[in-house]
Structure formats: C-alpha cells, structure tokens
Length: 462
Image 1 (cartoon, rainbow, N blue to C red):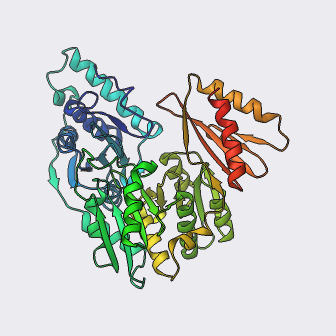
Image 2: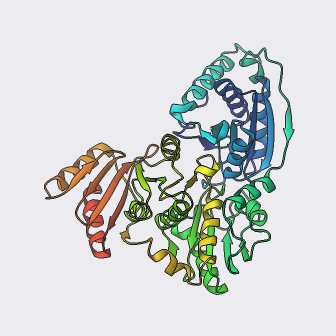
Image 3: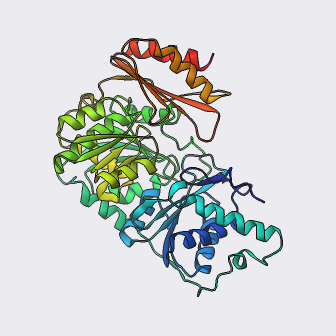
C-alpha cells in the first residue's frame, strides 16, 4: 500500500510521480475530497508538469463518482485556481508541486471561497478515507478504484472552462495602473505558470515586458522555479542590468509567489514588499488589520502602525495566515517567503496582485525602485539558513540555555523559538518534514546581525 505519511503534508499532498502519487491515488483523493467537503460541484486546475493532466483526469473521475460535477479550468496558476474557487463559490483542487523538481507533483485543496484545506481543516479526514479504501483494494474487497468508495450517487459531469481573462480582469479591478508612467520590467517565469498568466494580466498596461523562460516546461530546463534561492534569480538580475530595466519580477512554478529585483539588480526583501503593500492597502482601508508571520522584518509592524493599522503576528504557514485574516477581518497579510494574502482575493495568496501593487507604486512616482523600498527595508537580515541536525529539540534547548543568561533577552514559542535582544532577534524553527532547523536573524546593523547569526549557528551545529 502507498505510504500516505510521506505524501500528505501539513497543507497539501505532494510526492514523486508515479512512485508516491499516481492515477489510482488521484482518483481516490478526488472521491474523498468530495465526501469530506460535501460538495455537489468542484473546480480543478493544474500546472505545466507533464504528469498533471492525467492526474487531473483521475481526480475528476473520482469526484464525479461521488456525484459531484467537476469544472476543469486546465492550465492555471495556483492563485488563478483560488480565483475560480472564490468567484464560483466552489471547493477547488490545484495539481502542482510548486517549486519542487520535475519528478514531483501534488494537490493543493481548498473549500468554497478558497478557504484552505489543511491537516486540521479536512486533509486528515481525506487521508483516513483514502487509506481505508486502499486497504480494501489491496485486500481484494473491491473490484476497482471507482467501486471501492461504494457510491450510490448519480455520477456527476465534467466540463471545461477557461478563467484566465476573468482572473486578470479581477486583479486589475483591485489595483489602478491606468495613470502609471511607462516601465520596463523583466519577468522570469522559470518555465512555470507565470508564462501563462503574465501575458494576459499585463496586456494593455504601459509596460515594456522583457520575457524570460515563458515556455511552459515542467522539466525546468533553465533553473529551479524557486526564486527565494539566490542562485535562481541570477539570470534575472543580469538581464535587468543588461536591459536597463526599472525592475525584475520572478515567479515560482505555480506562480503564487513573486520575488522582486530592483533596477540595480538587487533582490528586494519580501518583508519590504509586505510593508509597501500594507501601506497601500491601509491607505485604501484606514485603520485595518495586517497579518505578518513571525520571521518578517521588524519593519512590517512598524510601517503598519505608522500608517494607522493594527499588526497581528502569527505562525509561519498559509493556513495560519488565512485563519487569522478570517478571524480579524485583516485587509492584507504577508510572509517572508513572498506569499501575499488579500482580503479582496478571498484571503488567498496571490503573487500577481502583489506584483501589480509594486508596479503601481513605482509607476506612480519618479524615483527608482531602490529608493522607493528603502523606507520599508530598515534592518539587516540573514535570510533563512537551514542546518541539518539529529535532534531538533535538543539543539533548540542548547540555544535557549546559552542565551537565557543574557540580560534583557526574552523568549517566545509561538512557532519554534524566538529570542529577542535590545537590537536584534532570531527565530529557530524545526522543519516538519526534514531533520532541519531553520534560522532567521535580524538586527539594527549588519555587524550585530552577523555576530548573532554566527553565535546561533555555532550552537546549532556544534
């Protein structure tokens, strides 16, 4: 039997195709998804990976076997799937493995209105159903994948629908770009779904777009589609300089994350983008709440307060951000991983909408991007540093003990261990899936950041 413990993660289903995730499993997940959500209709989309269309067909077959109608929107970004779920008020499933290598695929699921399906919101139940049905199949108690769920429902229907132009129109209704000055922008789609969405979203805007790697290719022939890894934006940085462009944008594989490069070819911190977008949203919705995760820069809550908003700090992970947005009515949320969440987008994350905000802000004034974001990028950060450890809890305890003796140091354990001094802080979080500890350090100056970073790493890696 397939090992679902390796396949079902905290927020999605993800594994190697076909060794861990195959057509039979996709069919069972489709049936279980309908049963757990109680849906009579769902929407399904997929990225450019070669295995995606077949997995979608199998998932849809499982869903309609339980009586649900399935609308297949075909090639799309993950936020385009969220748009479909939100606008059509249907549960949705997106087949993608985001930035993972070509041999991977997966399923991101949501309830109607793009509400997340994670371990605590239905994914654990879906896994339990699939495991039970797999047991029945492997024991010979059922003749086929379709019969294993013992559905007496009238089979649903499968229809096709293209939502790309609707998605683009909705995004453009949320950000006014009509009066911006002409901008030259290099866009690196990484052979992912940005190559599908950018031409339609940017069409007709005063933008001179220089495309890089727009060809949809799930084998990622040019570089990994993970712009948070510095090696994957080297090509974009060089092209921005060569073109004399105003900025560069890099999307990940399923184009729900966007990373920004300024006119000097320097990467712009996602925390600075969070602060910039927060300021813009608070200008439209004064006094609103903004959510930020605990590894975003001190700059983010500072800017939110300066703009009259209320910052709320939360754990890392999209399900936590979305839960807090729903609970507080927050207008916007941002993560240091370059996920950006909008109340006007069903509290879901969309890198494209964040990119439009950056373009609107830059094009609405005469200065360069580096000057524009400087007021939002106030501190020295390490970025995320991963260390392989044998015992995550033991190494964390060692770090805590070492810093506990220092005067004025405070601790909190909202997510891992956060240690805060007078002019610095760091967070140490265990990976849920690997024997790793993830370290993020920030300080008021580069020298202090480097000192605290090196002290923490020495303890972690001792």
